[in-house]
Image 1 (cartoon, rainbow, N blue to C red):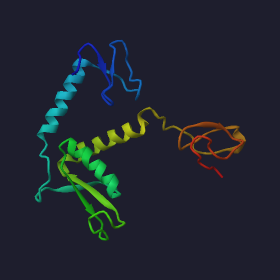
Image 2: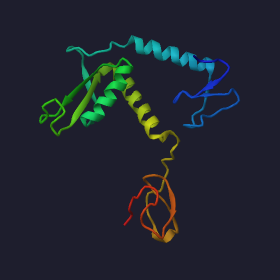
Image 3: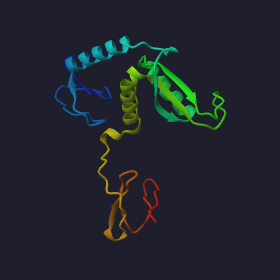
Image 4: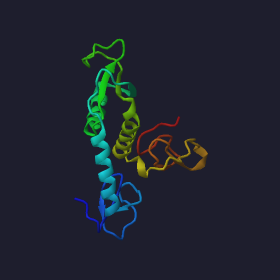
Length: 171
């Protein structure tokens, strides 16, 4: 239930007191309870208007290429949003997931934009990249005295050529 007196994060849906302006989890600007209710209603209307399961007549597009295990997770996420999906394998696949091959997640062309947005939101949520700075200088200079790891963003002294946080080796 959405309380109109509180504020909410439109990305992670955390709830905050009315005097707070930014989400403590992802850093996004909060919206009022009224705005959140309108977003929820709009999302439910859009979700309900989707056709759901794919038919043979639907024009489909590939939106993701991955292992079968990864594709199944994304497929469940999209189907929860009433976006119909289809999984296909490359020419070397038996289609059962036991053969080493690449799999493709397909959706109806008209749902592709919503599917891509859903997957992008899940990626940001799962990796916590909403609050991560992407402005890291990726050049390692041993003479600089200090470096920032381009993989994890950890700042460390350059007496070592390995990031002490994630183990990325620079030389």
